[in-house]
Image (cartoon, rainbow, N blue to C red; front, side):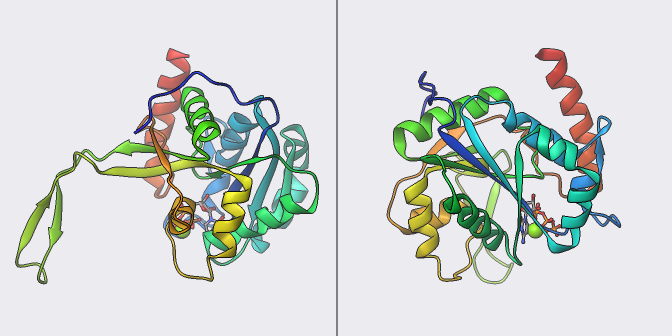
Length: 242
Ligand code: CTP
Ligand code: MG
């Protein structure tokens, strides 16, 4: 576990990949959840605005699905320009989308660090961005996490015997996940389609350590419609305390 160390990566030294190429099936709306309105603006704009405002951030490449690409280009071109977002077509799995964005970054001048962030996490706080950027800068790889609060049970033997898993050392993985660019590229080269639930897992497989940075638990991933109600409340509270 890493304490927040007060170093600031140099301006433009971190490129950002935004994973936005899902379909939002659990959200169940007729359009992608990323277009749902949060405090008067589409959810994805909140996400992009928070990252675009950071001095450390260089390029922003957002992977979108084939079915949303036209909507982004036709309806949101002003905003894409305003927040310096480059679009790329994503793929079937989240890791395919990140890979497509990685390839886009490689095609022209890119930074030495890459932060991967879910478009569906519009509430990431500035202090947590500072912390995870600074820690990655010093450790090559760092991800935001929050401590597990529930009591965790493991099912051993088809639901009729349980053991309690100590939650003291358990964390939920959040995004951004930030890596030295070469390390993330190596991790994706070695991926070979073996399922992974986040980018850090791919980096772990290379044998490289990933630093855990405890961030705010309100860095919610919007998954179900009711998450939007919570997100509105969190947003109101964040602006109140800003
Ligand atoms: N994502 C992506 N490419 C995919 C799948 C997901 O870029 N092939 C993105 C989503 O757009 C989202 C983030 O990864 O911003 C986290 O995924 P999730 O919350 O699961 O979003 P969806 O896959 O869109 O939702 P669902 O699983 O309910 O369909
Ligand atoms: Mg999904």
